[in-house]
Image 1 (tube, rainbow, N blue to C red):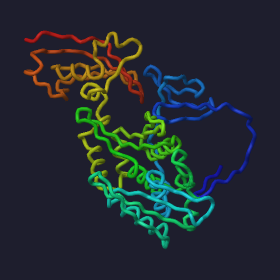
Image 2: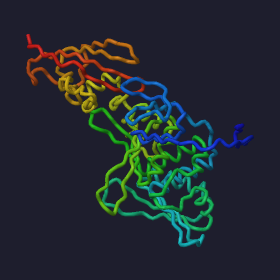
Image 3: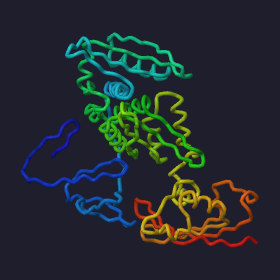
Image 4: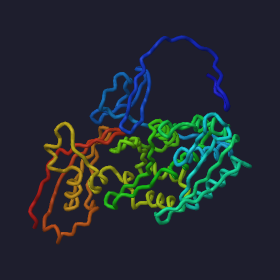
Length: 395
């Protein structure tokens, strides 16, 4: 292959026969399809090494690189189109009565002035001269100013066909036109999706975690959005939600949790409305540092960050897991921590690792001394508490 800016030219071809293709699915929702001789960095029991795809067993962790970027720039027209496509898929409607081109209609819904201005500006540029109608809707929810912008007519057909918009919401996918449109168009598409259907969730201060989420009933769209985010260097997970009502489809949720990824989302994509932008700024502040903290600090100062332990380690952990480790640390005077990282022992002693506000007069005059050993593997955090707590009477 010889690559040029606009095309690729095939020079030769040959028959290589058939080969088995393996599909590796990660808990994050990422799937890797490759023949057995491809190499991946797999971590087993905290030790990483290059392994063939056909040698990777369930339960292994894989190193996923997010140091990627999209360099191809976008044309201004493609950026505006991508924004409208994302909005239509998230909170819009595309319909047609049979094959009558005159019956083709697009409808986009907005809930505040920022969204309305954003959509109308792009409608005027993409569909110049096309008639549209704006209808205001009443709502009992305070703070919402709902409008529906409806366009119709034969002139919409090329746009609808180019992005494959005549399909149900469960069949939505990232259009090929967006994938080819370049960096700014992909960011505009994601910005519209997350603005119309996404949210910024701020958890309790004690957990110090925040996440950016997007829900959809289309598995193809969820994994396609995840791929776009990864291409921009933003790590995201896809999970299946729950829905008990028979008349509703099961949702898929894309979530961006890591602090670095949240900050990159803010810088590259962002939101349209002021309220969501402000909420995103809070999510990216030190108040919700989350996984930006050192792993040892997270384990011992953030409630619910620990977990149960494999290989029988829980039996010798002295009850130190999850909230237990956080509380014991908060009541301790000092901590000695042995961290094994990439087969090297690193001593960590901290006399000030106090994140929770437990005053001595509230918990009693106890002095807890404990020692913990944490085993870390490359790119995959695994830990095993191997020493029990040593409790000494107060002086």
